[in-house]
Length: 92
Image (cartoon, rainbow, N blue to C red; front, side, top):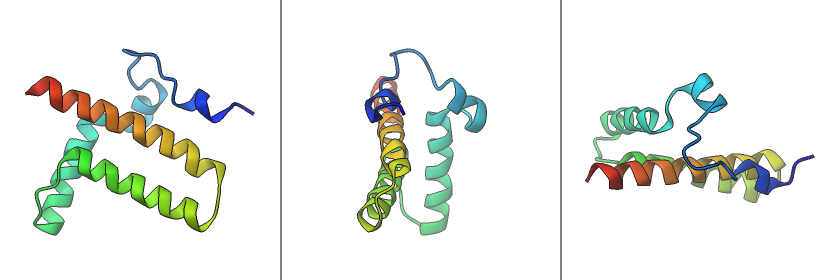
């Protein structure tokens, strides 16, 4: 079994690899998620804020019942949040 740290040690510049093949580019995906969330709620959420909501969901699930999958997902969600934040900073 891989240690949890192995799941978030993505080499810089490596892109999304398998994740991108399954779900598309993470930054672009969360730009779309934010547009959908904003249409539903009437709010003006950013892609990063939408990603933070997913972090909150996983933390809530982990609080209720520990599962290794929750921790792995949290690592991945945090990694994608960093990509979103970096992308936003680069665009400014």
